[in-house]
Length: 442
Image (cartoon, rainbow, N blue to C red; front, side, top):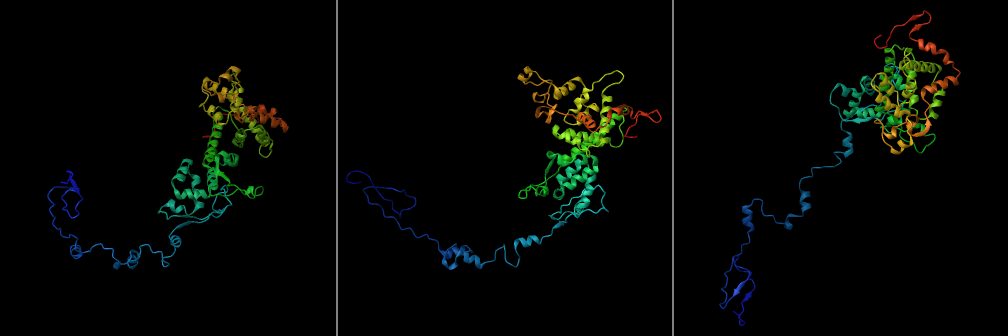
């Protein structure tokens, strides 16, 4: 103990045993001297004997790390000149090439087979597994001829599933769609051209440019539009609807001429698709598109439709019903009415009247409420241009355009109305009454 009576703490002895504490209390007795601890540094020779690989010593005798790697074995990746460049080795791999489609020859194709003047860029595909269809893809001309006999859902499924066929079809989309349309609905494919239905087209997957724009805009030529599967479905659907028109009339004993009637009805349908009067009237004035025979057959179709919607014995029916059906957005509504699928009760008839030409008063305009399940924005819109977009300008319906064009060309259609009524019932040369005939099944 020190003179001041306090305990003195001496620094830690570095040679102390490991079991003692860091601070030692200093008493009156002098500290006992510690015994010397032998040096416990491992002997390298013993480590070498214990470990065959020897100790891990970073001495300069073994050399630098990169020098030791350079003295060892070569790297696994050898990009030497003996093996060739990477792109050269890839090009030497086996690949099947689809050749460019040559222009079809008339000896091996039907006369209505659509051709395209554009040349194809060769498409490199991976090696295909063995199979009839996979080998058939090496002959694109035969592929496009074969798929023309497939139903549309199967064609769409094949286009979505097969990667090789998808790539091949993208090189000739126009040829594929038109060949299928000419096989299933040749007349509708001609009378409903895809260039007039921009919403049913898509940009060319092959990025071919519109050559017609080079004359006006040589520095800016956009990718052209090609028909899509939606246009193909529309064409086939309208072909079936027109056939239903003729079948429904014949089931009621109302006959139409076997030649030219379906084409005239499709031309009337195409006129309904035109959204403005300024475009409809010139279309009817075109004597190449709308011939005198078309005007006569259109008048005959309108007369037979009036005979179907009215009763000559009881006087029931109304000719305004025909006006309302011709004022719809499409002829598909007329086909649904003739097949008894739409407007089978008064409620559905009132809904159609509201959409066509119902005029609301000020109170109804202020409330802006739906009527009989018809939305406010749809009430009374079909009677105007653009089906309501140009409010205030009434549509010229296709039946009115036919009558006006007959008057403009000086055709005396009124003198033939009696013959139109008797057509299919009486043979004027013999005075015989014809029986019920049908195109489907004789």
